[in-house]
Image (cartoon, rainbow, N blue to C red):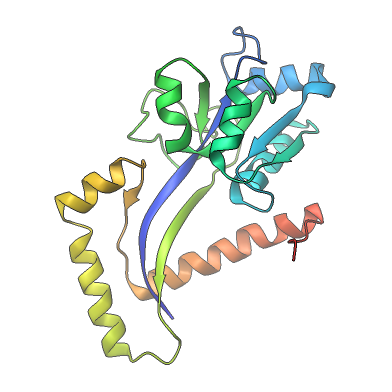
Length: 210
């Protein structure tokens, strides 16, 4: 039974030193990938993750065959990105943000419906010319037989906590945005995610490893 969405976060489409400095936009990145098919790959924190399928959709939207390289976590993917082993990567924004500011990688776009408040100067994928967005979230669930009264109390308590400076500041360290919605709105979010990403996963033929 859904209680509430706790927070949401977006991804960053980043490039490392394997991509020429002349590539400034996602459109230029896709053109470069098309012209260099042997280098047309991207990393993600894990096979089967939303960044994995976001990269797949980006390649499809651009008409480019991008080879996915799945890692066991965001840090190894970023390490190979800045080391030049992979040219591009799709990661949780917080994993790439400080390295972008330090000039060790370049974030060309973020994946949310609007620009990230943590990186307002960088366009969204839609602004970059691609009809694509991806926002992930963390939410609170309880066992299905939990009483409505308990769910209501939990929802109110979490929503109150999400307004506290301590929580807001804590989330900011990870570029997370507090949400706090109703159980019914959270249920709609879950259904939307299932309907949105289910067909994408099936179309790739991806199977989760046992």
